[in-house]
Image 1 (tube, rainbow, N blue to C red):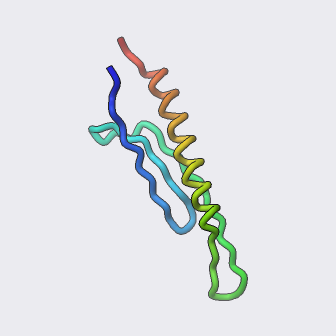
Image 2 (image 1 turned 30 degrees about the vertical axis):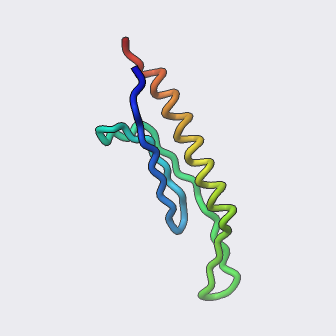
Length: 77
């Protein structure tokens, strides 16, 4: 029987975090990817929307990979 899971993504100032969560709220996989911040001059900070999007994609892919391997290891009949 297949079970349903949620993927949650949180984009913060310095990193993107993704988690695979069961319907009961148990986190079965999580991943963090850093976001680059540029400081061209005092008081100015820049981020690339492309860098942020790539970090989201990477965090979700790695989180999904960890979850798939967790399911294989923890599968019971």
